[in-house]
Length: 482
Ligand code: XIL
Image: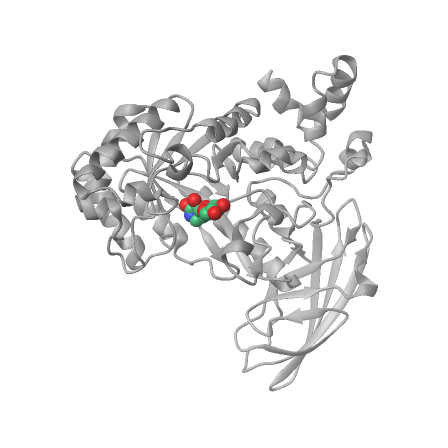
């Protein structure tokens, strides 16, 4: 049954699924679930699995009440991390009283949709009930071990991995002071890992933290810790890079950092990816977000031992970002209406898929009946024409839609050569003025029909390099030169 459900989500089989659903009603839920699946042709999970990877999401108990969220989660993602339901304040709110109901619901959803579960998290300074922090230090070790043993035993065989310890470090790489370090010093981490291994020998055991994605003091500290745990023979299988990024600020050392951890003999997972920006989101930031997402996925795919990527949440409305980072949002691949954004298309492309519907797919009744084909993303060709003088230039850029369907609303992202700075533009808004730039349509030229073209241009200052812009992506999809 699980296999049939998965197959039903492949657009190529959608008609068969519809027929089956009509015949028996059995697959009706699955067919509804394939509605907002995203780009025609395939899903993030199918593409990731074809590359030996996975694409995960986080889900909370309340998310399970939204048919929109569950439909996307069950079709696009193959790993789920409970957003809050396996944290200490939920699972053991008072000493020795365990509550696994909410976590069990997430596990049931995962099973029903053939998804693996990342258990999150056994030991963390946050979302820790007061009774633990109020214990005499002499009792914390026993409380921690009992918590780990009881929870990991309850979920034994049902979780693929555990974030055994979450966020142990300060920004400067020193160990965070909390109930656990107060009671046990740095030794609590090895003790937690050993206790988890004893309870569920088959779960992959992770340490998870944020701001360790690039090289720096905090990731150096994690690196030293993992290296020393390995030397002591403490069970550790992986490191989670949370990856709560700000648009345009994904560390350029991400891949090198993944590589050095995997060289220690542990896996790396991107565990909580999002990429926030000031809201309302600008077209340029949404284009940059597509670049960022593709960069993260490509960095993981490039390193054997980086096992997969999980986004933190399904779409912008259920993301934690607006509640925790005032003025920021739009951090996920799905917009306020759960339509795929340019970042989604960019990830599809990074995973080796095609984000433009093929003519045969878009002609099929199943796909044209679906509201899910994203308006963004298309095959494209870009040509440029520069007229330069000693300190300035004008450049006209022609975009040709070489895909099989119209583009409605576009952002063309590209790189300006160093020293060039845009002073004004026509037929598009262009920002920022330098570096990685996004040009977005105006109201009158939003549509580019299949096979059609549109031209915009800009004037720029330069300091000697009057070369044309390069590296064009249309709504996150790379364009051919021409
Ligand atoms: C967040 C949840 O998304 C919120 O709902 C909750 O209020 C706070 O925690 N790092 C982690 C996650 O490891 O557990 C956090 O999740 C986000 C930051």
